[in-house]
Image 1: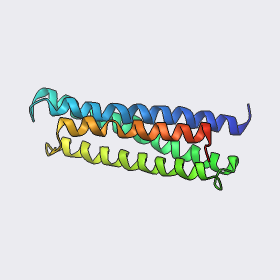
Image 2: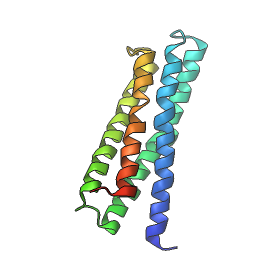
Image 3: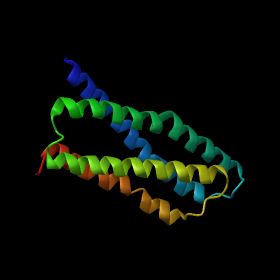
Length: 142
């Protein structure tokens, strides 16, 4: 196994971990909306959300970018139109991650203003971006 294959494998592993967090954190927010502020359940959700973001999502996002950056140079994809679409989606995925971090801080301070319905909708954003990214990488449609 060469270095490029190892880095590519690490990139896929880190993206899977990142996506798992991006799917799960908004779902936790949906459930968090359903409990009373200051309740024992609310405090438990705060711990779960903080640990998920800090221990899994943030490191996985950073690793995805680091390993992906290495792969960009090795694959020669910078000049390909499909790669520009993929990169835009990854930037949007990162923006979604940052928004989730902001919402987590709002829950932490009992200052959430968003509804359960909002988080149910937001939960679909990473899915749509992931589908586009996969079709760009596998299919290279243009």
